[in-house]
Image 1 (tube, rainbow, N blue to C red):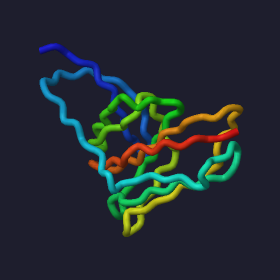
Image 2 (cartoon, rainbow, N blue to C red; image 1 turned 30 degrees about the horizontal axis):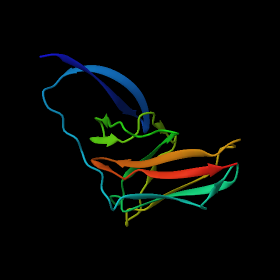
Image 3 (cartoon, rainbow, N blue to C red; image 1 turned 60 degrees about the vertical axis):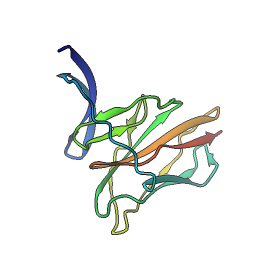
Length: 143
């Protein structure tokens, strides 16, 4: 059996770090995204350097929720997060440093400031919970 290289996230004290490991496998389990688990951003369009809110709806209630993003990514990849048992559907994901806990209805929000950009940039967002991942949301930050 040939060894294959996998990329995974490790969660330590609420933080996620990207690492690599070698494994032997003959089959892969590919978790699916939940179409009811959504990420949205307001305002729309997003303006460079201005306040914005990222909202998650349809998540599991009272659960740690991680938000990942990528800049100008085609999201043709599926990176398996073993500790959460989900896929990140981006090739170059970055973790928003602070996780949120969803409320009793499965909703959570992050409030931040959009990065300052000189040209339009496409951002992809995805929310992750244990055994639960949202669909990928595309947004554009305008200068």
